[in-house]
Image 1 (cartoon, helix red, strand yellow):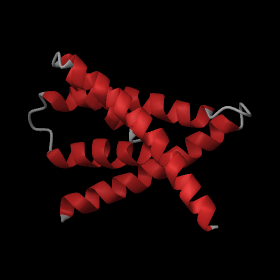
Image 2: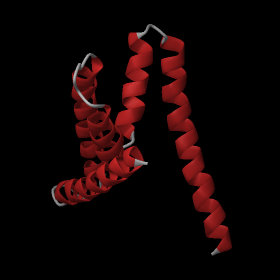
Image 3: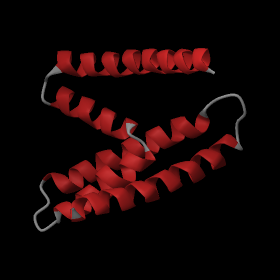
Image 4: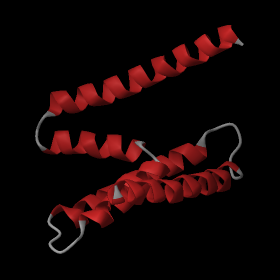
Length: 124
């Protein structure tokens, strides 16, 4: 139960940071989702660094990993989790699985957005 609370609190922090970062970036460029791109790239950079830190971390508490990686970065961007999981598959030489992960997440994600949008559009 404590781990769930830690993840939820971290998620709240990450979501707030995503909102602020997106606002800051969108004020710079109009007509392109620069905020989302920036958040995704920053999240990927951070999860890569943290993955290394937590890889062989002796004495590093699992609570810290949950709070930062699952909570804060999960709230900041789930794209970072997707990217790290794809990297891990490729790093383990599971290239087909890595490619399927990229294609499935992107294609199915876009299709799901279209379906969700159209279903609600018809109900409205």
